Image (cartoon, rainbow, N blue to C red; front, side, top):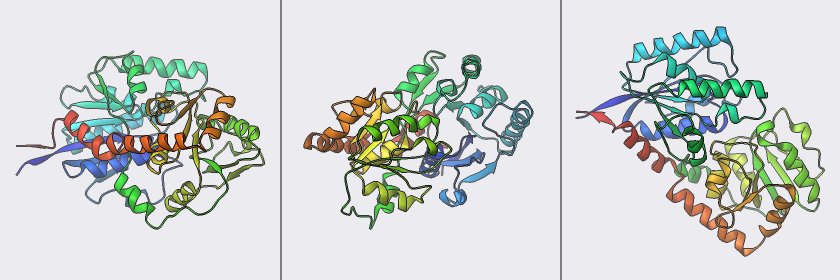
Amino acid sequence: MREKLKLLYIVEAMGGGVFTYIVDLANELVEDFDMYVAYAIRPQTPQDYISYFDARIHLIKVENFVRSINAGKDLKAFFEIKKIVKEIKPDIIHLHSSKAGALGRWAFNGHKIPMFYTPHGYSFLMRDYSSAKRIVFKFIEIISAKRFCTTISCSEGEHQETLKFTNHATYVDNGINIFEMDRQLEGVKAAFHPFTVFTLGRICYQKNPTLFNQIAEAMPEVNFLWIGDGEMRGELTSSNIEITGWADRKSALMKSMNADVFMLTSLWEGLPISLLEAMYIKKPCVVNNVIGNRDVIHNGENGFVCNEVKEFVEAIRESRGDTAQMYAEKAYQDVLEKYNTNVMAKKYTQIYGGGGTA
């Protein structure tokens, strides 16, 4: 019988889409690998996060991981993850998010233990940071890319950014767990409702609520729905916008099913899980023209890619027609063929070099 390789995920940003990604991928890979996840808590991490993971997965909390640059905490986290690796003795290390990627690539040399890194959206592309901070983040990526490590981006657009730093790179598109989606969707049926444009996620700078509000103001006859909450909810002032607040998984899916068009106005993305889920439930998708969004949605093929308010308005109006439903069907097929955890796990297993040792 083959002994499973020990696969260690080190992830700081375990909230939102990254949390869903880690859970789904780890649960898929645990059949072939002895899975360990060293993680930190984010405000968006579900309180019952442990229950999301397969019981065979070993969870290890990294006490000193923080999102922002903090010399004291970062140094402690550096030695904390070194201690974890020394105790576990993994066969493979995979770093997730910029903070884990920076600390991990300098904590380990990548020669003794194969090492991989997935940015989940480069920090230097995040426009809520100052120009000075973004320059620092980019410099960190440039020098860290010289370490012996393979970067695995989560979209083709992110991969193109990676190639500016290193040729030790590949990409595996994000995917969703369609079997879990089907389970969650059991008994959820669309009811009669007014025409509604919706989005899902944290109301924050990245998701660009200002643009969402401008589009809503330009279409007073249409209902707009934001499933989620966040520090910038005050930007959503148009009278035709409803904000649900944070909703559990079942409620969020029910509200999504009882809407008509999914809209994503983000300023940047890695490859958004919310978009893939909307594609799977066959909602026409209207997205902002940024990395991540445009890697999945191709204008005039499986959805609408827009650059300004006028284009969003036109796309939403077109979404009422038969052509948009054809786009939605194509987007659904794309998820079945490419953007799901089964396909994703097979690609990762191939990259890691198989699931066991003789």
